[in-house]
Each structure stands twice: as structure tokens, then as C-alpha cells.
Length: 293
Image (cartoon, rainbow, N blue to C red; front, side):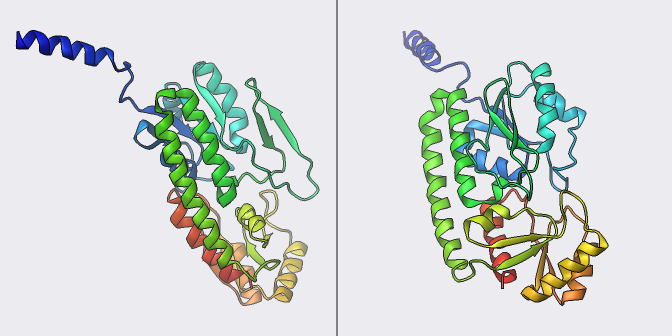
């Protein structure tokens, strides 16, 4: 009798949960900071894979065959507005028609390059993607990180309604930390509004915009400066009294060190693609605050 009751109870228990209960959602993202954001919102209900891995350059990235095979089985892809996604997304729809694609950068006010017009394209789901001159490093702004997290919340809730309460709770906790971080950085950059800092590759424009700083890039549109431009850059850096040049570990230090030698500056490495986003953004902000004098 006890065995029979236990059997009935077990059957009811199984029926009370969906077949997918406990299964992680397979999510792909473009860069490591997105993985951090997605895990903050998704928690244990998601399994996140990154396309552009440590040490790779997202501007020249091409997915490996093994990554394409894994993408063919994924449930969700969170795009971020990087150029390589433009050619990747149509390929993904062919190999994985059921893949949900959601633009994590939706609603972010993009920074446009000088003399660039806004060029975008709308995919078959009605999502707008920015390209053609816009700064894609949207994950390096605290305000933008909040927008990205909110988009991730919307994507996960749409795909997994049963986890909505879990996702909302995680998002609110993360947003509270972002608000605290924003307060810290506002205090850090107080009195530095309008000052410039020099970078090799322009990856910190959103952070600079939020706190009133001027990011000056050595590289322009992926190209190192010509001799005449380099001379002008050195002259300007001397006039501004710039004493630090920030460089990403994905790029060569050669040109940065030439400029540093001419203006008496240090070359500091800051990683715009670190997965440990909160820790990294704090460290980068302190380096930028020191450089912005």
C-alpha cells in the first residue's frame, strides 16, 4: 500500500514540473562582459558561451567551425552590435532556424565617429542594429550596462517565462550594484570634467561620456596614425599635459610607447574585454582618473 501511494505521489510530482525543469538555457554572447551580465541576470538557469574568447580581437573575429556547430544547437544569441555579427546572423538563421536572436544593445545611444552618419539595419525580427561608424564598446559604460542587463532580462523572460521571478530578482540585485558603482565613479571623476585621457584604441568612450571626460584615440577606424597625424597628436598631448596612455592587451604597444617616449608618459594596460566586469570597470576607471589630468 505504501509503495502504491509513493508511486502515485511520484507520478503527480513529475507531472507538476515541465519536462525542461532544471535544464539550463543555452545562450551565446559575443564578448566576455556580456557573459558576466547574462550570468548576473540568468543565474543557474543559463549556460553562457562566448564567441570572442580571451586574447582575441572582436574587430577581426571569425567563429571557428566548433563554435558554429555549438551555435546550431543554442537557444538564444545575444548580439551586441559588433561588425562581425552582421555576416554571422544570416548564417545562424540558416543552420539554426529556431535560434532566438535578441540585440542586447537595443536602446543604447551610440557614440558616432567624427563625420560619420548613423547607418543601421533592421533584421527580420524588427530589431535595429547599429554599424557604420558607431562605437561598439557599449559594455564599458555603467549606464549602458544597465540597459544591456534590462534587455537580457527581457530576452530570458520571453524565452523562459517560468523563470521570470528568478530573472527579475537577479536583475534588481545587479541594478542596485550598478547604481552604487555609478555613485562611486561620479565621486571619483568629480572635478575632472572636461579633461582628456589618451588611448590607443577607443574602447572607453561610453565611460568618458557619462562622466564628462574626453577620450583621445591614437588609432582611427582601425588604422594607426600617419606620421603627420602622429606629430600633431604628440604636440596636442604635450599641451594638455597627458601623462598616461591606455592600451588594450589585444593591441601592439609599439606606437603607444613611441608617443609615451615623446611626451614623458607611462603606458598603462586596461582590458576592455575582461569577463570580471565590475572589478575591471572599477580598476579601469581609477586608471583613467589618474590619466585624466
